[in-house]
Image (cartoon, rainbow, N blue to C red; front, side, top):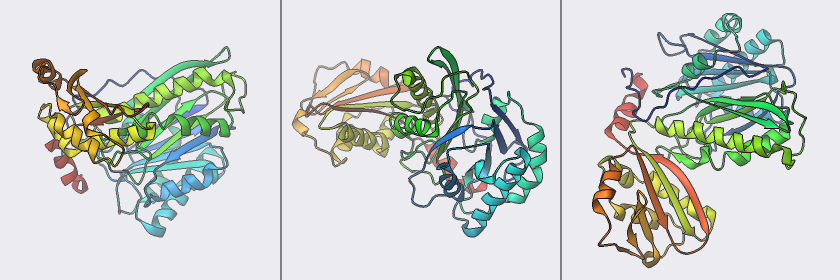
Length: 411
């Protein structure tokens, strides 16, 4: 497959500064790709704490098993990431690849192997040529720098068409702290967790328990509220590292009010990264914002919103710029959640096109038609049954999705 055109929904990569206690580098190791970087190493200062959220797919890759097994220690000194081969469905060979790769990174950094987190993305079912990782480790380590964020974000991409990053400056108490991260993801994107790969760092001084609590909570309204194609990747990994290099006070209680601004900044950063993933949905040229309100519970609203966001009929109607509200009603009804046809209302672009189970004969057709031509589409559903609400984000479905995934193994 030839190089993909940049998504029309792309956003420029932000200016990212250094995060105290973090060094990173990327090189071309020839793991699968030719003529591009594909191997990343991040080094963290001693005493760095870590939290993680991983795929709920029941056939996860070897890197997921490794990260889950060492996460309970709450400590990290390094992160090793390769693109091109996912190291999934590779049996003992996959486990060996993770072990030997982590050992090589630990030797270079000078730490325990159990302090090295590993992530892989790419083709499923192919053995990871870990010897290339081991052989290139000295060269990779020598390139470590505080300022290689742009290159690192580029190196972890697969079918992505642009690198994704975000930064937030906030404070804990009166001390300024930084939150900064990158992500990759384009297809096989659905909740549980929906990022494929994302790595966030901060110089805040937080216990692993606090870090995990914050991450698990904030992923619910960000990465777990996006969908490209309803498929949950075998490799989804979100890791949050806190180096403690700021002068912020040590926080060990996740309910401490001193964390409020930091928690809000984390949620804001995760949301930006998640939406960048949707903006790069394979073949997509429209971002869809779906709000469901009036449901019996928030969970019910979420399930209905996801039913709409995952519907091929809704997604293709948006591609055709057709305000087909009947398809939206269909998606509500198939969600398996409480709904009353005769109380249901639907709005497109903020304009109600159907209320109380029937079309509004006098709605502004031209305004809705013009809204459908935009890059960002807004759908609102009111079930009029309760106070439950949810908002999710999706992308449309074009022939480009077929082109990309029909030839993926030939990339």
